[in-house]
Image 1 (cartoon, rainbow, N blue to C red):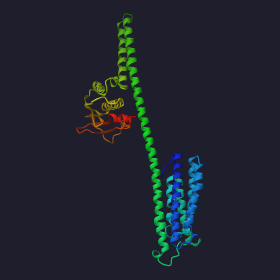
Image 2: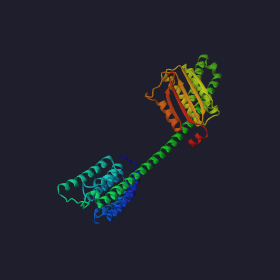
Image 3: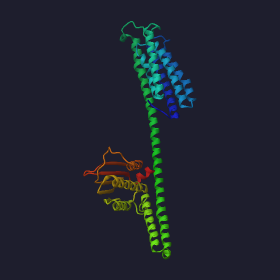
Image 4: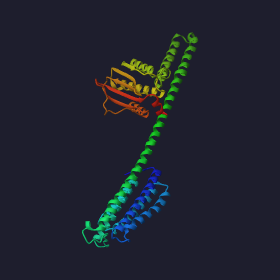
Length: 415
């Protein structure tokens, strides 16, 4: 079932199908007219005028559809149209031989439309109505409660009868399959239109997400600068102003206060670095990664090797992204890998920057659940047009590899 929840889109889809109905019914009416000329069927036969009545029925239906303002009312009008349509088809089938020839196939389009555009319950209701209508007609004719009307008054075997042959070819092969082809083409256009809308909305969401990430990076830069340049300087100024009061405070109290201030400065510096290292803005990505490796190695005891070969500094957004990836990857290694050694590599190749973090720890299986760190890496990298891969290292451990666009192409993409 094609579950459309957007009212405006559903309404536009129904309007497009009404146009398709008019085209297909017009084609069928033309085919029926050709059948009348080519066979001995009466001009009063419903084979010709039922499609015209069916065609005219689409005009009040379109009028009612245009005036609906709620999804529930729209479904109700559509369901009512299908129920009336089934009665009209049953009347047509009755005059075309009931269970003879191809009468049962005329309900096919109603069932397709109802299953696509109605709710699951209403689509099932229309389908049940079709089954009851056709079955009722067949059994009423079988029991003699209503007369059986044959479309053909053949006096010879069917394949030697011109009326049967012409009707089968024109109405059956040409008319029916032409209508099927047009109907399927219409649905394909509806689905293509919906997919284009979804793709456009996904691109818009991606652009908004990238703007949000850039805004977050700017805010992190501002907070880090405030911590590093303002708060640390304020603490240093406090310590400096305490120096003349050393004798009044006493050596022990003075030393204790200075120790507290020094710890506060160090904690503030660590906090500013964790938010965004000042080196990233001042000197770029490579010195920041080297400083990150030194800091993690000093705190965790890991041996960390860094290898880079960047010809020049990438865009500030790419620098922020890759530093974030390296920082999260290092934290994952420290917390979960149980590793002794980590290798961090950063290389530029053919318009791509590739960052690799390899450890010799316990390894990572594709079936293992991904924590917030890995999910955050994947989301940010994919929003930037990059790719993420996590695979076992040949000698044990895990390799996290990230590739992102580098250079002019990436700048155009971010805009």
